[in-house]
Amino acid sequence: MGFFEKIFSGYANRRRIRPTEMSWSLIDGYTPSFTSWGGELYEMEIVRAAIHAAANHASKLSVKILGSADPVLQTKLRRGPNEWQTWGQFLYRLSTILDMQNTAFILPVFDDFGQISGIFPVLPTQCNLFRNSSDGSYWLRYTFVSGKSASIALADCGVMTKFQYQNDLFGEDNRALNPTMDLIDIQNQGIQEAVKNSASFRFMAQLKNFSTDKGLREARESFNKENLQGEGGGLLLFPNTYASIQQLKSSPFVVSPEEMERIQTNVFDYFGVNEDVLQNKAYGDAWNAFYEGKIKPFAIQFSDVVSRMLFSDNERTRGSQIMATSNRLQYMSNTEKLNVSAQMADRGIMNRDEIREIWNLDPLPDGQGQAYTIRGEYYLLNQDGSTTKKGDNSSNGQG
Image (tube, rainbow, N blue to C red; front, side, top):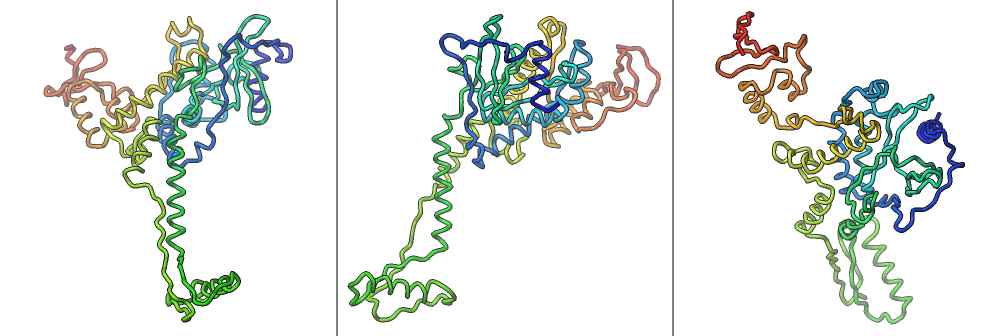
């Protein structure tokens, strides 16, 4: 069973429907519609770098499956989102689509028995909202670049959005970035022309006693051949038939460094990144600001959308959910990590396993890392509330 069939044929079998048997009607009034846009935007180097930086950090999120609902599905999701991707690949792809399209679709994947076995991010060329005339339910009809199309009930789909304003269901496109993209294109063309012109020579010459077009053309070809082609050794020679020769210096338009920085800042602001993030130099407050403004909103929306997809209202009320989280302390500089580790450990705020997690170390065996150290007294606070003095294996039972 191929990828398309894993999703759409499996879904039809699960719902015991055949798409050809369903009757559709457009929703009266304004109909939400999504059309893939901006493929050329991703060809811009600075745009691709900004989107990659955000997606790269989003891929580091840890996906946790909580609760007790549908243990078979939870076991599969702990292995990965589907049989083709890791969670890191899934989140990278999802973040990239969301930044490029401002709308990202997540669809359920089905096994050979028609049961949900995972989720997958898709990029259709078009998606429209329809109502099933037979029962009044709302469905999304997807059309892909291959020409294939299929439909899934809106309640079973996950839709993540950005810049959602006019459309009731989907995000806006990135046309607001067009003026900046035009400036970048002009800037790149100016640099290319500057490089080309710097490697070429142009002259203006005045000839004596030449009045025909043929004579001027022959003189120009002779001058080029003798002086501007082959190995001239840098020495310019011309006969006395020339009254004067003057080199022309071109001054192509090049955007100033200040203007280039402003253009880059516009792109960075639009995608919620900065130069330090792109160059992996963001630590401490800079990283926290990026996480709070970019990664955390993505993680929250992903968690809410996927949890609603896979679990019922009752199951979510009982604590079943998909959660994307990150230990932000891992992204501090080594100096900041050392300071936090010492301060938190000495005050009994973090145990040894939590400190080790900051340094990407595995927990200690047999629960040894679950004890807390109390500053000054050098006591270990055990899980049962008893304390053990440093160097002493006995517990005194104090709280």
